Length: 454
Ligand code: SAH
Image (cartoon, rainbow, N blue to C red):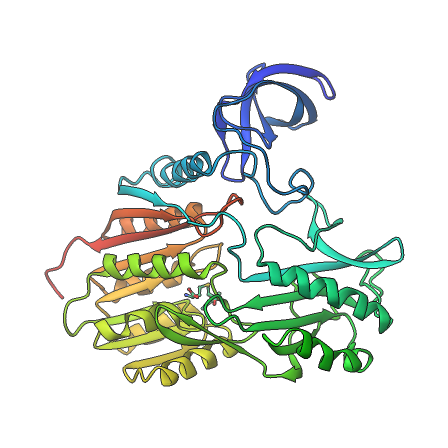
């Protein structure tokens, strides 16, 4: 196989990153924006030792699952992977990613319940962090191109709520009138790095956080009253100064510019206060269904106790507090823990306590105090759980462990570790919280095999 040459092939598989796979001269070639069943001519763009990358030179026979992308930026933008196939096809791919992670990679054999699709394929997100750039003398914001940090100006992303576009259309010229410059990653100069917007799905309350290299607070004072006036739903305007050369978006601190430093939304019937730093699922109605499935998997009996590790602002545990005797939550971000404590109070939940710290360390500390919950919920970030967390959770001897994860590969890996330590992977359900993208959420029930000494 040679670079820049064109070969005919058929797409026979899909990677969890959303690239189609074909075989050319015995080698796997990854081709983005293809569908399983496509017959095409592939131009080879990069060859590595064991695999290669290609792009579509000509689509000869389109796969049955194909459809026209809705978003004009789809081909360049790195956000979506599956706009070119029907939602049914996208769900089949995602179901397969999950099955593959658990059976082929982790060698587990749980029951796979059918994937739960999202009723709205577009405008479902409640959060956007737009990188800012200067193009042709104007401030623009949008999304990074595939595998790059080049900003594609796209205030109008079809995954975001329409009001975000309206806010940006007002905000960008207003910031220009205040002589705000865009941050430039290469030279580490300029001011504004990201515009971060969040909107409570049920409440409609909006949070705006400007992330800048050096404070723009003084320069933008004059536009804040008009911003509130035009968009009364904007309840919180904050600034986070991030002077570092880093891909991490938020800086260490958040300073209040106007309004409050939080917004409130409702989740699973509870009022939830969210700070800019707190994790909050980006697709609220689907997350509510996900948490309901987790609750059903937990199958709480009377008087049981629940440990919610990686609890964020407390949303999962608080949605189950009425079914348990006591809830303990653990989370590493202090502001999220503050939110969780306050969310329990605001909803008159009196059987909950929250601790701030690393999940593994705190689980170990709780274990030493002979803490022994009936159910442990683990909802870690993409990288999954560390061994200390898993070992400590196992030693607490809960009869059920519920794993929730936005990364089926690490969830399956961690489930295999539980399985080696006496827990059976009973059932898994994929829930699509992220239509259009290659991401999918999973919820999994593990149950302890030997219940004698409890
Ligand atoms: N369960 C919450 C949050 C899930 S996201 C919800 O559904 O909203 C994962 C959470 O884990 C984030 O809040 C993140 O801040 C937290 N986290 C990341 N690393 C952690 C660690 N080592 N210990 C405890 N919490 C951690």
